[in-house]
Structure formats: C-alpha cells, structure tokens
Length: 437
Image (tube, rainbow, N blue to C red):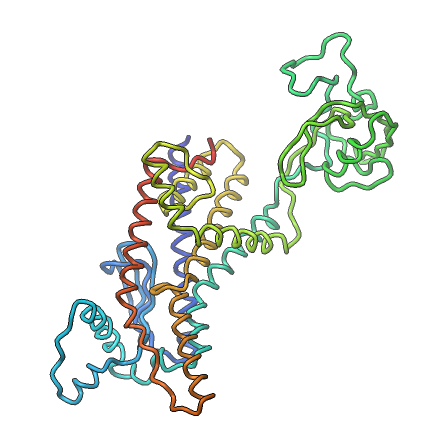
C-alpha cells in the first residue's frame, strides 16, 4: 500500500466532505436570504473560529472542528416571554434545570431578534417557506450525490465485458481445473477451431446483433452442439466464422447476482473489460436506489451501532453494509486510492464513496428530530396544522409553535448522536470494515 496514495485518498475525502457540508449550508442560506431572513453567520465546522470575513450582514468562516456546519438565522423560534417581561421591566422568574436549558436557548434566540432581526425572523415566514429553507440543505446533498453518480456512470462508465475478444482458449478444460496447459487428447476449444482471435470484435451471434459480451454468451450457452455463425470485425473488415459450442459444466450468473454451476454451451473465449459509459439516467437511478438502502440502515441505526460495538468487543468481522464514521470513510478512501489499479478505477471508487456519503447526509438530516433539519420541518408543519385548524374552526390565530420547549429532548438526541458517533469512530480504528481484503 503506497503511503502517499493513501494520504491523498484521505485528503480527497476530507475536501469532498467539506464541500458537501458547504453546499448543504448554502442550500439553507440561499432560500433564507431570498425570503428576507437575516442570516448572521455561515460557518463550516464547530468550536473556535479559525477564519472568518463579514460580507454585508453575514459573517462567513471556518471553525476548528470540521464535523458539520450551520447558518445562524434570526428568530428560529418566536421571542420568549422573558424578552417581553424585560421590555416591561419585570424581574426574571426562578427556574428548574429543564426550564433553565429552555431559557438558555430562548436567550440565544432572542439575541438574534435584536435590531432589524425582529422584522426578518425565520418564525415569521409562511410554513412552506420555512420548509423550503430547511429542506434546502438535504436537497443539495441529494443533488450532489446524483451529479457524482452521473459522472461515475456516464462520464467514466461502468466496467463491462465488451464484445472485443481478449483471449481464446486452446482447449476445453473442466470447470475448476487447476490445469494451465493443454494436454494431448484435450478437446480443442470451439472458438480456436473456428479461427476466432484476440482483438476480434463480435458484431452478431446466430444472426442477432450484440452490444455486450453477456448477450453473445447467452446465445452461445443456449446452443450446445449447434453450428452458430458469428460475425466479427477484424482489421476493419467483417468476417463470418462458424463455431459449434460444446456442452460443458460452467459457472453462470443468475439474475439476483449470484452464480450457479450448470451444463451450457461453451466455446472458450473471454472478453476485454473496459469502462463503458452508461445512459445519463443510470447515475440518478443508482443514487435513488442507494438512498433506499441508506434509509434501511438509518432507521435501524441504534441497533446497527450496538451490533458494531459487539463486533468490536468480540473481534468479529464488521458488516460491510453497516454504518461508518468519518474516520472509517476516510480509511476506505485511502485504501481505494492506494490499490494497485488504474487511476480511473480509483477515481471511480472515490466518487462512489463521496456520492454515498452525500446520500447518507441527505437521509440522516431528514430524521424528524431536533436539531436535525427534519425536526425543524416537523415543527413548521405542526405550526401550519395549528393555523389551518384555527381557520377552520373560526378561532383566533394561535401563537407560533415554540420549539424551545423541545430543548431537553434535543439534548438527549445530541448526546445519543455523540455516543453513536464515538462508538463508530472507535470501531473504525480498532475493527475497521474490510472491503478490499
């Protein structure tokens, strides 16, 4: 494993993840500004500020811990009663622990409503505008994933057995045989007997035009003992060769991706494998399919993290389809970059990893719990339901939903995420996922 290539792979993953986070926050920032919300900060990372610059009313910058990002909008929640009491000169009330946590969140929120923030607050927007702002971040991750998969599938292509012949066997050997050379008396391979050569491009088999080696193989496998005409292109000229497949025991691929041993027609030739660009819709379809699989992982996340912890303690192998931390993803990127494979293979592998990470960010942020984007969407929708019900029943419009009351639950969610994240990081260091052997 080349150390330099490994480091480059990790750095590419880190930069790609930073770009993903930055675009996620732009997905929130752009509609917020378009709808007139005052945005005080746009930050990548958490903790102490490393660098920042104020442009207009917004401070843009980077923080020390690159584990996420945020924008600070005026009035994420309605002003607290204490803010109104303070304006009227009333003394603050004594509070218990949970009330103190809630009030701390309200105090920070009230500070964003000072100055022109009072008239440009997030909570004052209509429901659909709040939903658009909160879904803007995850939507950017999904769009980026679709773009990455489109580049991988249509720009680079998928490794496919082409119709160009790579090699021709001299004889027919039993399936699973360790024999490397033909012995006297071995049956001559039908492809060699017919005059097929490496470099020939198969155009049609038994009168049927073929675009892939799999199509040609399917016709051959179904024609044991029959003379089958094969049209090939050799040195720019078409030639028709006649081959008679022999009945032989070979492994064949099933529709579900597994293999099975069966007696089929066999001629003894292999295909050249190359990256073949796919139709433009293949990338988006792959991204959507991956999203479905990630949803299946996310809703079982606590159980899967627990199983990861058990595997780590017992020394059992990790589930390659299980959850990973940023450390695990970086390690995989390094391993992909350091493999002894053509550069295009490694680029394709890292694009797939970055695309999968963005899909994970998309799905994870839609979980309907604060402080995640999905939690804010639920709050906005609940506010809309209350307003609609008031209109239907002829009642006065209710006060905006005060999500600061959910701060204790938010703390529980954050603590749970920290515990799960720490467990995955430890597992990815001690018992990493082995995808490449």
